[in-house]
Amino acid sequence: MRAFGFQEHGGPEVLDYFDIDEPKVGPGEVKVKTEAVALNRLDIWVREGWPGLDLELPHTLGTDMAGVIEEVGRDVVGLERGDPVVVNPSLWCGFCRACERGEQSLCDSFAILGEHVPGTLTTSTVVPARNVLIRPGTLETVEAASVPLVFQTAWRMAGKANIRPGDVVVVPGAGGGVATAAIQIAKHLGAHVIATTSQEAKAKRAQELGADEVVFYTEEDWGKQVYELTAKEGVDVVLDTAGQDVWPQAQRFLRQGGRLVCCGATSGPEATLDLRYVFYRQLSFVGSTMANAQEFDEVMSLVFNGWLDPVVDETFGFEEAHDAFERLENGDGFGKIVIEMDA
Image (tube, rainbow, N blue to C red; front, side, top):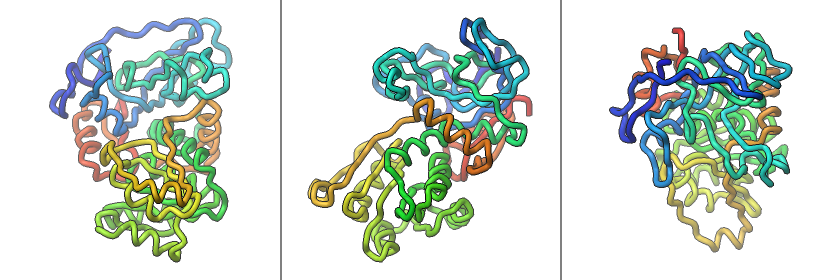
């Protein structure tokens, strides 16, 4: 089968097509024919590599995926060949202490398709049957592919932040996939949302998704602007994907008992804090990764029933994968970049 990824870590120049063996289906598994794959910043980080990331090369990229079941393994019930599905990219063992208490994303052997194991940018992928949900006919394939990673991540973050109706929630970097999901989820939970972004066009799109106000983080005093939008009372929650550039500002505009939940570090991994803000205001800074199986089912149900909307930036064909990754790399998009395999 043809796949897209890299044979050595490095910059965009290492990305290329290569051939891999067709996967075999085992008990409790299904083979899904790939129809669409959404890209994530994670694909860039995996391509670049980091200490401790040990991959078998060549490595196939791609995490989010929608497709059609083409083979069903032994002991699988409720799924048939031809079913249109969306794939949960999280992988877990099912029997460690974390899994036994329903916290699959804390599994001792937790992995993500395309990060720790070969990904979905290929003809077909074999996954555990528990990882697929039949998608409704009202959800287009490209939209379905754009949902799993970002919506489950944002849903878990909102849960960890314990967002309540009337809370003021800041969502930095409104053009990113997790941020577009977080804006919608915060509004769904009854929050007043302040988004930050870098461009007028992105500001307008953020407001269309439900942001009540937008601040431009390219301005030097953007944290002060956020604070003043709350009548100098401060915000309750920050749902952060950016990391380094957000934390120094957030510790100042969070109100007493405020919560920051972080799932990423696109602006850098080394945030600074003044601990006097932390203990005097009793602030909470919490990490979050992906979601557990129940949370995934919950947020997918909201998407399937039209309460939350996938946000697609641009689509490319499989033969245009280099162009798709260039679009991802430059950061100008709003929402998800999706590759359609048969386009």
